[in-house]
Length: 346
Image 1 (spheres, rainbow, N blue to C red):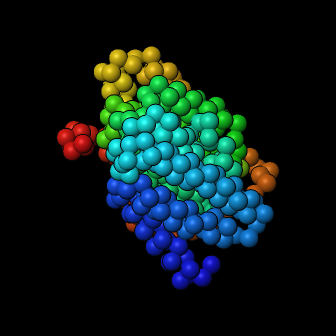
Image 2 (image 1 turned 90 degrees about the vertical axis):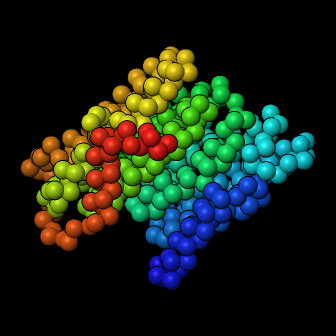
Image 3 (image 1 turned 45 degrees about the vertical axis):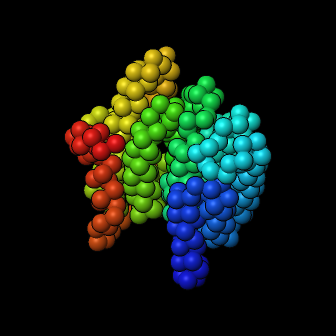
């Protein structure tokens, strides 16, 4: 892709995200979401491969339908209340339509079908953007309207997302699909706490972005796309693979790593809100995710490939250290001791 075109699309992504997260008017938020959608489409389809084109079409159709629903929701609310302010969402039908639209944008169950397919058809760097940056504007809209959403509906969707993200990730061999189901599962954790503590949702999202970005950038360095190639990638960058294992375990939520912090706080907050059954169910469902994270960690560092391997062994490459990956891995693994300071700031 032409570097100038790539720069234009990247700046458009930044512009669209900034417009949405800083807007109070529904039309401006919708405009930002549309700019984002149109900017990411060329980045998904830049490899002229049938799977990439298919992913692009699926992404466009889903996002167009979600944007239409969001516009419909805001119009109904304005018709009944005379308000175009995002925080003044009070009509029940408009609230239900908005929940549906944002669930489609994010890939929450039962509107999750497009997400694994689109991630599988995208390059690793674009998949990273789809899993992190592209989820920020819809989550911001959810935060702004959290006081008027239906708690029962959100809790049901959150538990269903955690369950499906865990179950569907178990039998996958493609790493991008595993990370897509991981994303769906984490969105369940963010959604369940949204109404009771919106700042905790935002903290969970930030930490999830650090960990996911570190994983995608590591996979991009080692050029691993499926489990069988991951088995031979340790010869290329041994130190990075060891750090990669820690990041995966952090994403699983194991103490004493960073990923344990949001899960611990969410379970604590749910218990305070007398939602102990929901906290128990979502904690048990996170064990499903733990299984496939452990499998990824096992494949990446602990297992040596059998002698008749189908893939050429990759030689050790003495590349200069990537500062961004090092910073993200540090943030993904070592933030738990700083949790009192983090808690004081939210």
